[in-house]
Length: 149
Image (cartoon, rainbow, N blue to C red; front, side):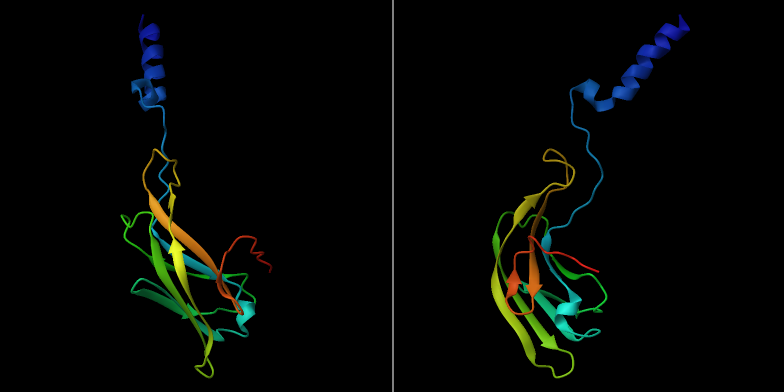
């Protein structure tokens, strides 16, 4: 008798929420809303040869370009999680670390898209956009970017 009672209880425990009508299992991957920019440091010369500044609305982040042996570098400007599917102004300024001259200057609008890393019916929901920093063209799509070492 004891064995016949334990097996159904074990089955209920293993099925968890799906037994109670919820058939989605969510993972715990986190996400933040924001705009990112990636680049190949070698495109901008030697070790930390340039300073990259990315502004979204009035929030700015900056860093040096990185080492030419690094496959890629990036910046991320965090946005409020409730920003939604909006189009925000983005400004890029790349300056030479040696002379202080502006090497690249560009601006565009970032069209934020919804991202649910755990599935559409699971939290969190983040709103994101991404760009590649190109040494001649400024902010371009990161699609097809080949990272080589």
